[in-house]
Image (cartoon, rainbow, N blue to C red; front, side, top):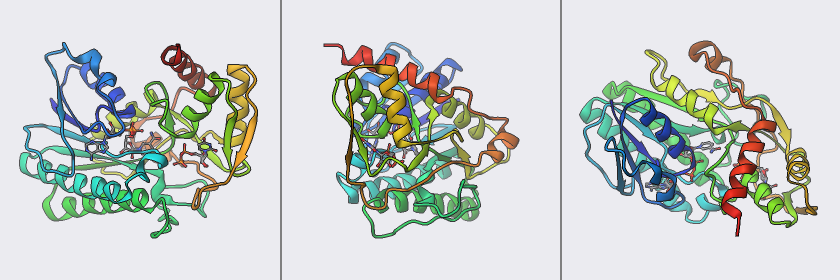
Length: 310
Ligand code: NAD
Ligand code: UDP
């Protein structure tokens, strides 16, 4: 198949592209390099089945493809808050442009949605049926509401124009190729520990997240995209829940060194708990995460050691 991956030069997009090329597909990566980098896909430059286009998803694009994975959007709070208006545009215009293309060329289109659609959840753990608790005027809203509107657009194009859609709600995912300055918790803590700096915990560290390894997640993407019937939304994530303080302690233990925990103010609207219910993914896709935090962190630490070497 001919497959377009928007945001393909980012962390998750580049892992997805590795798998799609391995499977023998033709892949077009479209990215504006806001948080991604050519180096994430440079190992495919001499593959004739791979093409790279520098383009912004807020501007329309015309390509002949069979499938579209729409991943273009900064995912780390630091980066999506840097230009909040642009983040909304990326989610909303990006979705419209992908859906318009899918409609025109009759392609199946996949949306990388997020557990952030549940906001600061008052139902725990979160099933797909939970409608969420998002503050529409807060500092995370550009991302959360942008992704919620994208889901709305996907379902409206599906109902009105019969566009073939797939939606994954992704929970916190980590692994090699996260940018050292990405700003999300796993990469921040590993980079701080490796540099012998103190580990910055926001709040008291009792808030929780459930961490999925990138390879597991990409397997879920491909299963959902190629499922005959299911539109989603389908939660994809690892249900093993940890407090942020536990994560910090585990990373310090693995890396060694002299880092200490320092506590900084909790940003507003930071969700207090997050854990996916993955029954739907288990039953419908036969999918389950295999790499647990212990092993995933070892692999991620090994990666950061190679790129942080002087
Ligand atoms: P990332 O920041 O590494 O990748 C995003 C990619 O999109 C980057 O390559 C960036 O340059 C590109 N991009 C951003 N704005 C663009 C625009 N306007 N036009 C074209 N390209 C643009 O983040 P990631 O973790 O790889 O996330 C990929 C997708 O998965 C995002 O849509 C994100 O919202 C979603 N997601 C990720 C997680 C996670 O934990 N990693 C969780 C939930 C949802
Ligand atoms: N966090 C932290 N220190 C950091 C970065 C993040 O304590 O250096 C916290 C953050 O406040 C949040 C959790 O870790 O409670 C996860 O943050 P991240 O930005 O990775 O993802 P999200 O909040 O979008 O789930």
